[in-house]
Image (cartoon, rainbow, N blue to C red; front, side, top):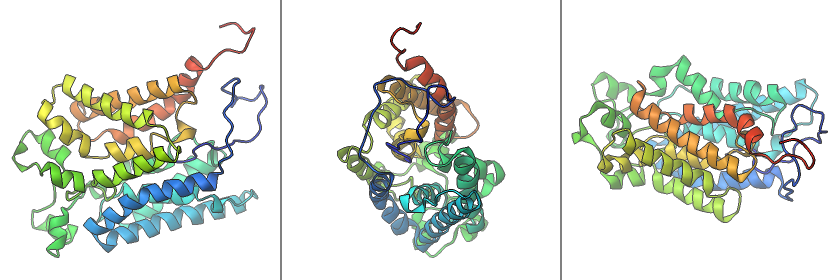
Length: 334
C-alpha cells in the first residue's frame, strides 16, 4: 500500500492527467504520516518474517529499503527535484519488495529489483502519486521474469530450525513446496495444518506466510482510516467464490486464501491509492477484477500464484475504470 491520500501537483482541466470532476476529496494527512502508518502496520509481518526465516529476512529488508531510498535520493538530485526521501514512501516500497522475496533470494538481485521499482516505475513517471503500477509488484514481476528459479526457491521454517540453508536443502532434495504448489499438484497429503498456515510456519516468501500478522496490519490500517475495508474484503471474497466455481473443492478454499500472496497483496498493494480507482464504485470493480484474475491464474495458468499479475493488470485498467465510473460535469454530455 503506497501513496495513500496524496495531494498531486495542481492540474488544469486541459491537462491529460485530469480524470475526475468535483467533488474532490481533501485531506490534511501528509504523505509521511500515512507512510508511517503503513510501516507500523507492516511491523507484525516483519517480525514474523524474522521469527520464521531468521536474520536473512533482516538482510533482505535492509538491502531493499536501503536501495530504494538511495535510488530515490540520487534520482531526485540528478533531476534537480526536491528530495523527498523523508516522506518514507521509498521505505514502504523497499519493505514490500523484501516481504515479496523468499528467504534465500540473492541480495544483489533484491537490490536490482528495488532500484528498478524506484527509478523506472516511480521516478520516470513523475514520482510519488504518478506511478502507473504498484512499484513493489512491478519489481517482483521483473524479478520473476529474470530469475524465476531463485524467486521460487523456498524452504520450510522447520528445516531452517534444523540448521539447513535453502541451498543445502535443495541439494538434499528437501526444498519446500508451498501449499499452492501442493494443491496444484493434486496430492493433498502434504498440506500443512491450518494452524501453521494461520501463524506462518510454512514456506513461501518471507512476508506472505503469517496470516495473523497481515490481518493485524489490516485492522490497524482500517482503524486509522488509512484504507477502507472494501478492496481487501471484496478481493479475497471474490477470489474464494471464483476458486470454488472453477473447481477447487470447498475444503481447500481456506488453504487457497491463507496461502500465497493473497492477503499481503489485498491489504498492502491493491490498496495503493495512486494505482486504484478514485471512487467507491470504481474500487469495487477493481477488487472484483483482482479476485477473478487471481482465481483464474491460479487454477488455469501454469503458475500456482496469480496475485502479482492480477493486481498489476488491474492497475493498468484503472484509468479506464475511472473514465467509466466518474461523474460527468454539469451540462456536459454523458
